Image (tube, rainbow, N blue to C red; front, side, top):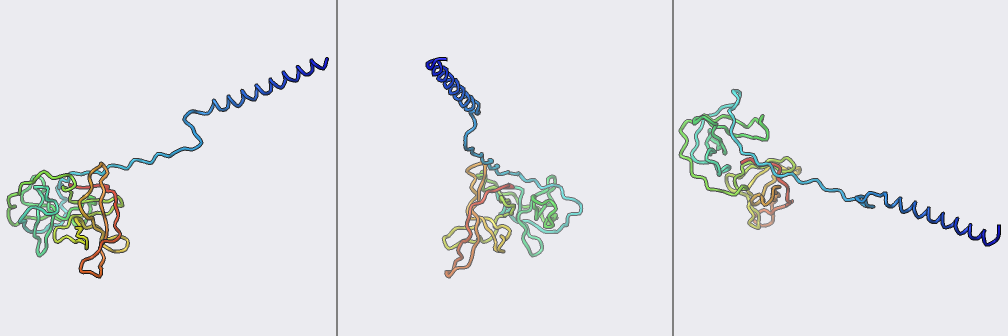
Length: 228
């Protein structure tokens, strides 16, 4: 074979090799799915909406303890309801006590719908007729709540007497179960119902050098469930 012919053959061979390698890389790239990238972003799970429950006092079991007493005004804790009352039982006050459907002589007090087996629940047998119910105004949803369950499971109920407040004048509207440090947790201000996931401003009070306590451990927590 002549020298010129050998050179031509070598050139053709190189072109074929280069063309094949190019096709290989082109094919490899084209086979990568268009929805894949070198980095991926995980989608955060959606925060569940706060569950809103319209409470209705059930007919109590025959084993439910019973007390005698009377009611003189509508409930302060559940003031948005016309069937909830503030009652005297012995030397104490129970609020709210709910009328049992179909009965005008018995109420259900100390209820905890988050725990149907709560030992605090009792039947109140009225010694006097109920007073006339006061008209209920249309209130925003966050003001119709008488029991709150926070995202960590803590239950909070409205203060029905003197409300605690801090040195800045911020009032606590709900009292909750004690926190891990043993201090009483409170919800300050109204619940925030501006979105489907409600929130609450929680904190504790501690003594200060002034005459008024100061709020400590203040934070925002999601509200899991409310009863109205």
